[in-house]
Image (cartoon, rainbow, N blue to C red):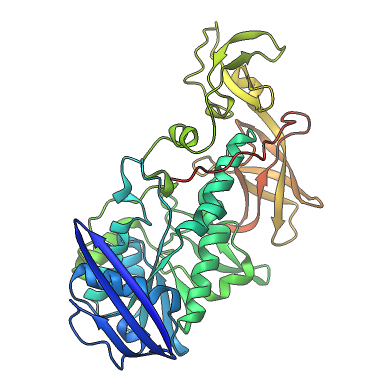
Length: 432
């Protein structure tokens, strides 16, 4: 026998659920406000019980850490964000689906926590969608794990003079690892998400590929997913447009059909990343803005406020537009210059080639167009020689390689040798 407890509070109200478990079944329960008794229910069935919102939330908090279910080859775990995309993915998964939502850490001082895909409001919306379909829903509270795995490296990356992409780190390692682990515990044969991407067989193996709708394609953000995991993953929206998804949700009567898009970098909760960094470990310290010859042109309040290609906020006048080129963390110096100085055709990346490739299309930022390049494998990743110059390639961002629409490699852009000698390892995310 195992006893588990969950509670929840809101607006001065508090609910408590206490369960005694015998394997994957509830032997006894203290739980008020639910629509039916829990005694004798399997955990899978208990996760579909509704009732008073606070009581259901307390039940979810009790079930999350211990949830498990007997394997069923027809069961699909569906990652639920509370939005329309994951709701339609749930529809596609059929009557044996189970929803799961990750509750992740959010900056409590962010101005718009409700739009984040991992907020308490998103959890409630995801659970309501599942329960409205008569399906179970499980919440996994991973706030501290997320801070360590994603938020901490984000802060340390900026402290090292990089421009990290936390969404790629989250999706490429943390999020899908947790979701696939849950799917196994839930006895589900595969995991579905509402991402706009496809899985194709290319050069004899399963690889991630661009979505049919180029406006919504999320393959760049998912590119660090290990191809060996793809046989357990399903992207049911990869062949359609966002408009088709909303129409499908509306036709099914889903309340989230018109819900607005969630944010990128959800833990910022709608806030500016510079303000976030200052609150969580990086300090304002006056430094110099210099040209490429080292001549001082102005002052700034912190090197980490600037990223390669940035033009606004430099605070210096010139006969031609100036851009941030790179920074030196140890000297707290930002080097600026003309746009032509941002151009590069050679890029090193730390990462993997998923298949041997000598030529590929390369994306260096989520919104940037792809550029053709020669590719050479290295001991730690790959080196690119692009047919056309790239402007503002930022260390810490992702370089994603495509061949016929399939992702054939992905890595993190490295700092060019000799440019950023210092990496501060003492910066941590402040507790809040």
